[in-house]
Image 1 (cartoon, rainbow, N blue to C red):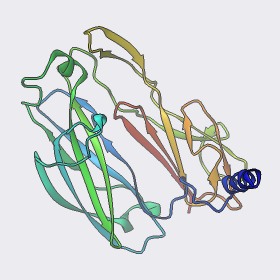
Image 2: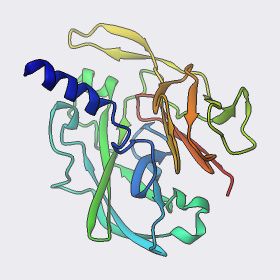
Image 3: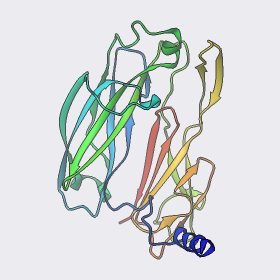
Image 4: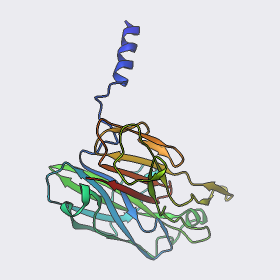
Length: 263
């Protein structure tokens, strides 16, 4: 009996009917883009929600955002703002103005207060203390939320810069047509940075960023929907992918994206 159960589980794991994480259907928040992910306080950072509403029927959607000092999300705290710095503030996204209904919402301002490092330890000042911005949407009665950390440091280490100049390559050439079954896709972007972190004993360690690429499409699938910067992914689908998006994250809050739309 246990062997039959094992076989059934294996068959289920290979079931192509499961929802593909890379398939864009309905409303999703794919990320939050910030013009700076590390700053010197006081600062004002511009953020934009990267949203997808493929096959949606709404002409526009209303969202709101709120900011506060990070309650300690990396230590298991809930992403919430009990003591807001700003907000909640409402905004509207006109989906009909976004080709393929995938793109950025309006510019939203996040204030990083001058006092954020007051009374903090040397360790906290070096590695940074974060403000979070939480963006919320209610679409067809369903709540959607995402948050972004904006880190303030004392500047004794080089601050992070976001990935820039990203491009999708189709079979080693800048993409100029919709991918077909078996085509190879990859991403180019700004070189990864090295950075320092301070350990609890006060020693410093130099690390290198590791980029992660999340691939999305309105049809078909990828053999690697999550990939490293140097990995080539294969598009697999019965029809060409008219909408292909790559979201690039640098693990320190930097995010860029590039979209190929061939309706």
